[in-house]
Image (cartoon, rainbow, N blue to C red; front, top):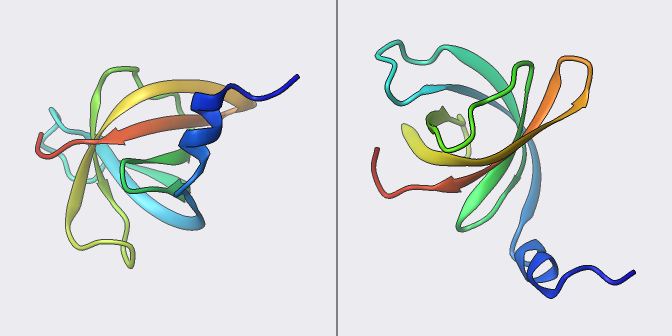
Length: 97
């Protein structure tokens, strides 16, 4: 079975990274609140592993020391469990919270 052309197009331009991230929900004033691991980053978004599920359609504030300065904001497009207490999420960067 061939991958969907949209999926294949989305794979282009992604850079695989393994990096620590700190994050919180943008609506929460506590900065940052949780830890995660970035697994890929593109111009438009990122993939992240967390120890807890993140709510789809929510906006996260993400700090990734060494990849960018300060916080970036991203909307959770999807989240799925990959192992016990390990969740993978796809996020789309936002211009602002």
